[in-house]
Amino acid sequence: MPINSFDDYFLSWKPDKKNIKKPIYKSLAGLLEKDIIGGVLLPNTLLPPQRELADYLDINFTTVTRAYKLCELKGLIYAETGRGTFVSPSASNKITISLENTPSQIIDFGFVSSFEQYNSIIYKHLPQAYKKNSFPALLTYEDPTGLISHKKAALSWLEKIKCYPSIDNIAITAGTQNALTITLLALFSPGDYIAVDCFTYPNFITLAKMLNIKLIPIKSDNNGIIPEELEAHAKKKRLRGLFIVPSCNNPTTVVTTDFRKRQLAEIVKKYNLILIEDDIHAFLNSDIIPNYMGPMSRYAPDQSVYICSLSKSICSGLRVAYLIYSNPFRERILNALFAVNVKTSSFNVQLVSSLIMNNIADEIVTKKLETAKIRNQLFNDIFPYAPKKGHPLSFYRWLPISSNKPGKQIEDYMLSKGLKIYHSDRFVCGSTNKNNEHYIRVSLSNLDNDASLENGLRRLKIVLEKSRIII
Image 1 (cartoon, helix red, strand yellow):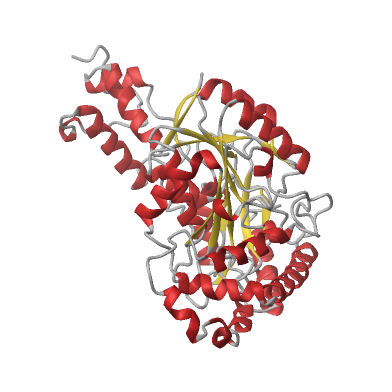
Image 2 (cartoon, rainbow, N blue to C red; image 1 turned 180 degrees about the vertical axis):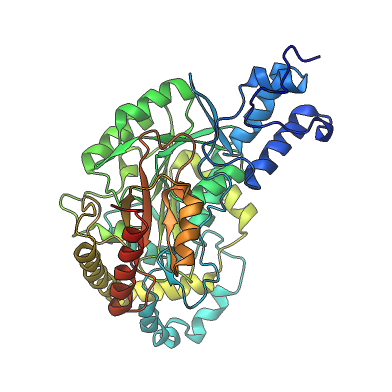
């Protein structure tokens, strides 16, 4: 029998006792997940204290604890010492970002493409890339980590971004997400903790949820993740890894300085963490960012996985990335790669490698950087009050907003006005937003030409100001 009467007592969540089956903790977790995903429990809702919910349901306190823990591992809820347990900001959203079927009348500032108009440069190179004498090697299971010729092209590309691995430590994967999946399956287990930037790559959040890996948000500043914050969590959370996007963080555009990379690498080594470095934007830094020295992983060479995708630099649809692993991880990485891929398609890699070795890739990058410069200037002209502390050539911008309405509500409102944007709620995991800061990410790369972007940005500004989403 419950100790207290709950007839007139407020609980933010009162699951129907009739729907709870055995095992009770799993059933309770399922009901909680259903109400969060279904929008019954809104983001940032304070859930009932575990003892009160246990009393209401007339079950053991530890049963509620186990149910909450299951949902926490899925990223649906988070706990703060002394404050309670809350629904995660992004829990009810489909936060994985992909190119959904956006109606043609909608101006899409959500998806960050890779300036697809320059794919036309690739078309005319196709006959040269696929010569008849190259076909036999492309059509077998041999060389599952990549053909030697393809790895030599990888070395050539990586040298441009000041990365100098051994050819024996390179595996070619089908893009960043594929490389991240292989890495997490190989080196992490359900229940492990990985530190991430307080605003981070949303597809990594989703992947971690699917694998029941807990992400711990770490505060950052204009130089990257704050070392003292990382170390504090490493001491108390039994961290297993650190995930970082140092060259242009998605979504904040922050560039991690070389000094900060050294500081973070020391913590990685001190606490025996696994560094996962997603360096998809490295091509934006070499010869552009002053004092750029190369990847962070070179400061923790025995504890790192370095991923360099060519999706943004060359072509997104080809789905090619280079996964560089430390020697201690070799066997586990290769086992996971074989289990997931068997082998990455050599056909796409052949085209990418030919583009690199014939300097066509350099031509594509040059045009993208020129366009990114023009489009960032357009954004600065239209939003002169927007922060300019991140990467000057980012393919997207991070715009502060004053509205504290739920992200889904703001996204839906903007969509009703013909504008697709992504709210910062998509990029958070756990209790990130303690300072009540809200943003929207604005893609600069998805519209075909500068005139369309300028018109779209002016329309975006009008809607944001009229609705008082920004002041």
